[in-house]
Length: 315
Image 1: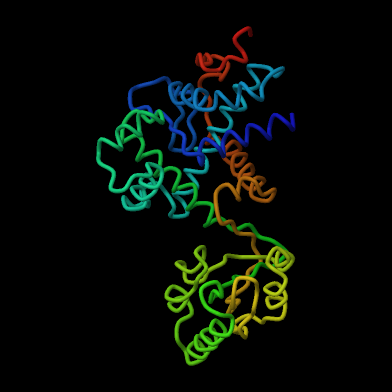
Image 2: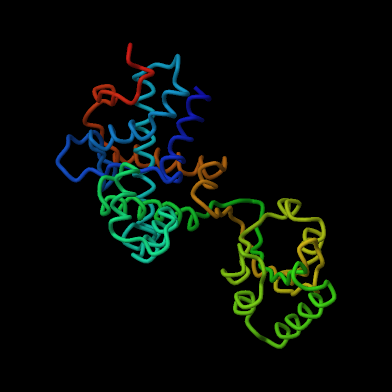
């Protein structure tokens, strides 16, 4: 059962994050389950099975067909619970902008200035059916990501919010990089905004455009940074600016802005793969069941597997 649960969780993460399509049903179809204000139809469930057919075929050999089908339906129920909870935190699909959706689709299409015909071809190739379905699906992906970043789980171990500005020594000499870092440090001490300067000058592609924000870390996680950076973090007080810290990447100015007694997540995949995050989501599902917000109308075993699921063809 443990192995079964692990690969089913993988199905969920891959289905949402891997860029593969989902035929979003707009026509009438029999409702299997109601989840809060949402529902799962037979057509949606069949599509989910088809979408994950390769994973099912590779991992479900020797497992019971009905149990597998029920646990995959449970994963869809979990998704619906997350969407319901997303709306409560202001991260619902309605909050996703058209610009965000277009940007993510353009990255997947990987064409300079794609035309509508390019979008249509990509939608069909990836089993979305229509461009409208593709946009709805991408909005759902963005909703999951936004939700994960809003979730905070109480914890006895504090986390600290880390920021830095990197002056790279790859394009200039270490002495020039140090001089530039000291100039920035003087500006910061004079009261200039850290995030603004990070956006202008930081060479870190991951955090620079986000104002130098590295995210939240427990002190025990500092060991994941390069040694010089970790040592500087361990010596730094909240609100204090570090002196320029030299690493293999150049010179860093580091700041810890605040602490919290909670666990946060940078992405949906991180939420689902974290023991604390996964337990939190499972507890939400149980809460919905306890409050009779999950109503089953059709058993999962009554929905036939699509032809793409071959592992159960003899069952």
